[in-house]
Image (cartoon, rainbow, N blue to C red; front, side, top):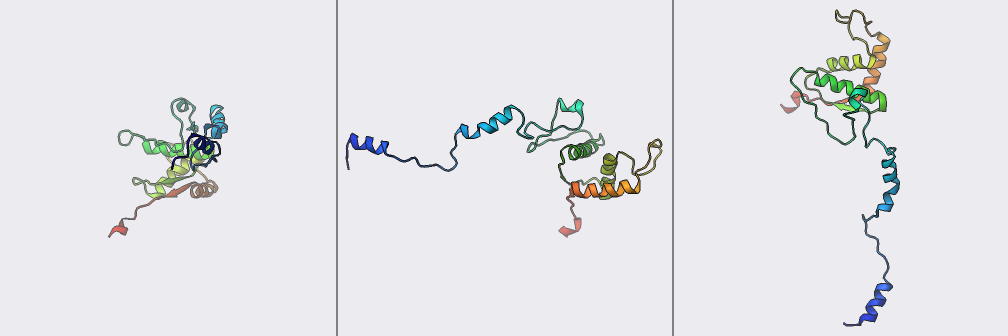
Length: 159
């Protein structure tokens, strides 16, 4: 049916805007863009590792994957554990751990030593350092429980 150019013009002029779900304008995000510019938005630019000398080169950014490589026994796991402790102390992050190389008690000892900053046991290499007290151990265990979740693989599940 042909109604002519005048009717087409009238129809266009009287048309109602119909919202399209998921369609936005940049102005809807100006506040976020401004916050990003002024670096007050959040953790998108990363948080400190806890080591000023490293922060110039690397920051931990939520949602980004970090891969730590190195030869066996070069301290990769120790470094990651120290980083997790630093992040918990500075920004309160919590973590899930899956460590195939450590027994739970050994991993707990290593994390506690980093958190308390004292050795778990008396040792020759740490003679000048006092061993953590029972009170520090108990507080440390509470910190472990509130900071970390363990992912364990029970070998007997699959039999």
